[in-house]
Image (cartoon, rainbow, N blue to C red; front, side, top):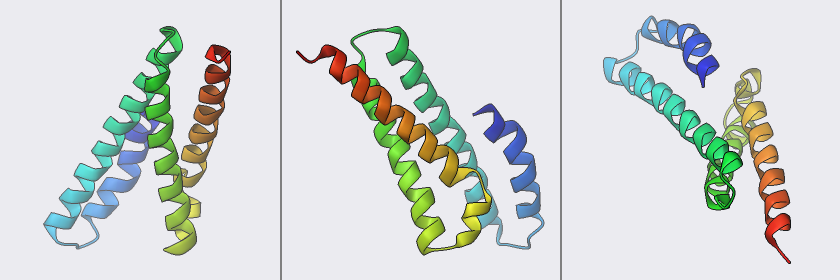
Length: 114
């Protein structure tokens, strides 16, 4: 989340403003960028809280589902829309988060199953 906001935003948002696009497009992208930061923080919180408070597997499942959706979105856009997305961290990082989340949910569900 910190990397997304502090490192990514300065690399992405200023060039977008200089791209001579309609103001609505530029500001919708600004909004979407920061929504991504908030979503990342929420996912991190759900994983963290589920890890420190046993019995909160549902939060880890929700965070894993969202991460998997982000993974599928990133990979899907890179495969079907524009391979240029492979040059960004999105498809790789969200794939990693989704796999780690799936492994954690699987391990946790095994621990509570008889």
